[in-house]
Image (cartoon, rainbow over the protein chains, first blue to last red):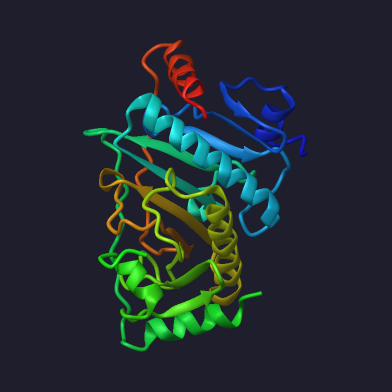
Length: 139
Length: 139
């Protein structure tokens, strides 16, 4: 629990939120600036900043709640698709420093898109060299 | 296992991939059209299309592997941030019908961005009505 954290204050009840679901370890509530209508945030009750800092068992609980919300959004809102996204670090777009998963229902003509650049590696062996570096730092 | 599924063929070894990690239930391999260099895909070995169709215990294993990759990417590539994203349904941007999490390392000036529209609800009670619909369809 962090006194300065907006999401911890929502969890503690000192900031209002439009809650959709709550269990012992997680809560889900509406994003007040939704990418699409129905956009819901799923967070653990314990304070962790990034996915890298979040214990595996906490993360398991959060993703299971995200799944529950996705199932309900599809059914309740007749969503044609769902995006689940998560940002770690300001440069990646993280604004609140308490891990959260966005569960975003998608609809025809919802004007929501992500520019997903289709990049390339410069040389044939470059992808392999990146893979090697990642492999070497696996814990 | 689906014979037509590209990712099942990668798992089965009949299509090549640049594998980064593998355990009993999941594999991680390099995206050949990376959003940024180091972009890795994490999938379950069992075939499920969307997060809604994926059993909770399978999903838990996939997110724990995604976390492992994020930790390694940050360390190995000195990433300034990490995005974890997941699309369900063609309209949401899903191309391969086998659930996958993108783990995307972020760097200064990586030219990668998502237009994340900051929407609004039309009326004060509209958010509450969307929340109600989702709540009513929670399983």
